[in-house]
Image (cartoon, rainbow, N blue to C red; front, side, top):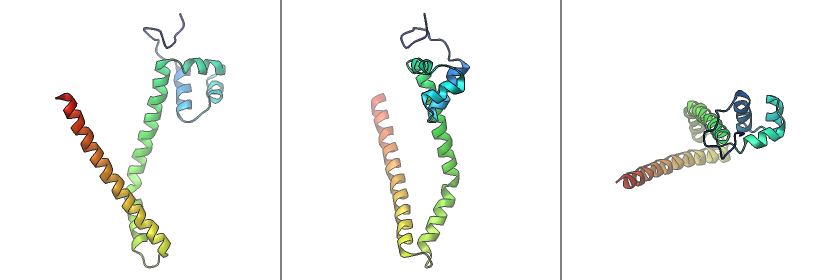
Length: 130
């Protein structure tokens, strides 16, 4: 029996499948993934039906997103300082100052909304557990 989405105990993914999943997770096309790992593109189509392959793509995407967010977090303070400096400088054109102010307000609003959603989610989870 070949490994597919109906198999009870699926085999672990092999190196080629993992590499192909990584390529697809980073936006590569099926044909690119197939060429890179040395298989026919129909193999990639078949692998896409395997739950473990789908999960591998999703996990690579989560890792990419997490790394991007970590990098953004390292630079947010410096970026915000520059935006504030633009907003406060009398040498900055009014349109740029306005855009800087809007950016600051949008950032703060998003942060507040996120915190409110997190609090509400925690409340709902507690209600479900009770």
